[in-house]
Length: 70
Image (cartoon, rainbow, N blue to C red; front, side, top):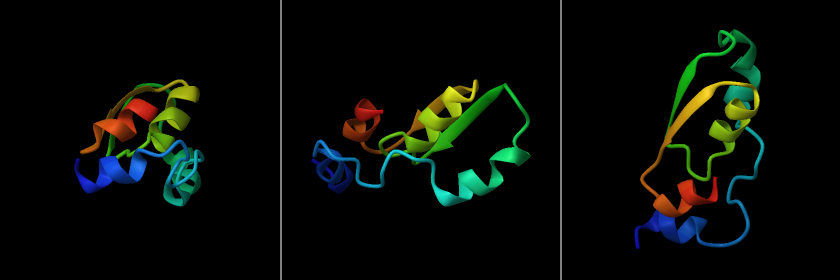
């Protein structure tokens, strides 16, 4: 098991469920709709946030455990 799988293997979310500060601050700059690629998305907090805003999201992370929680 890689270290990220281990970190994300608990029921809690390691970094919470809200988008990170950068995304929260810059969200208004992203054109509405469309497709977004979320790199190193961990447990999916940014990808889930963007999907709820109507974006088509592809999230990528080294940890399959983290992505499965998303």
